Length: 357
Image (cartoon, rainbow, N blue to C red):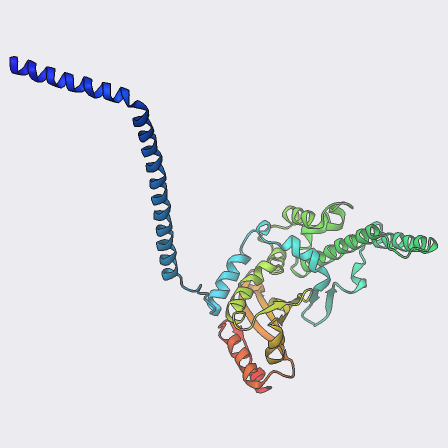
């Protein structure tokens, strides 16, 4: 007991002396403690940043090691599959209602006897049977002419752009109305729109593309033959071709499309309907390479619908239609460009293009 008591007292005294010493030197100790905490905080932060930099370097290194060029399957089977899947989409998931109004002037329809049924650039296709609606364009033209005369009288030759724009919208609506009538007649689906034609459905100040989608959804079902033809007339159907050709050719010989050059031909035959898209492209290279490799070309995409098989896609052709080089391009470069095009397996480059060099 005595030994235990002595140990207890010794420990107690030691603690008390330590506390007294700490109390006497509390300012120094507190400062040292704060300094240690601050040093530890910045040191750990610095180490953390260094670790993050190292981790980022490792991740980037792994990414570089794992990166491989994107592979695009350019075979015809792959192209046909992609295009068929797009074609099967519901009407509201395709830009048909957007592309038809803006391309209506670039569409031609030809029947099996090679007779022209529609051509968007010809004014005669602006005629409609309903007399009340037939005067729409004429009134718009008169307003436009009156506006011009008024401006001339005031020594001002600036046209009234609002009147001109409204007139063009009305013309577009009439052309859409007529193209729907022609296609439904050829597919024997006239009853779908007989009760209400598009020109009677759309208001004067309504957006054409929005109203066209509403009209088709209301009167023309997704499974109708007319819609199956119209689903071929939009830029989404062309995307698989554009991607494949760009992937193959544009790395070595970059090119871009000629604005406003897109045309659509709808040909009706006894057993099929062929929707043919025609596009024009032009190369763009560094100025010092212009004389060595500048060229322009056109290509076509033909989609064949089998009439005897419920207007399903039966064939797809992606062809080089024409190519022209500036006179300073040598034959080796011409061959190189054509051979690069041929690497896109689904793109048909006829041997005649090589023979003509």
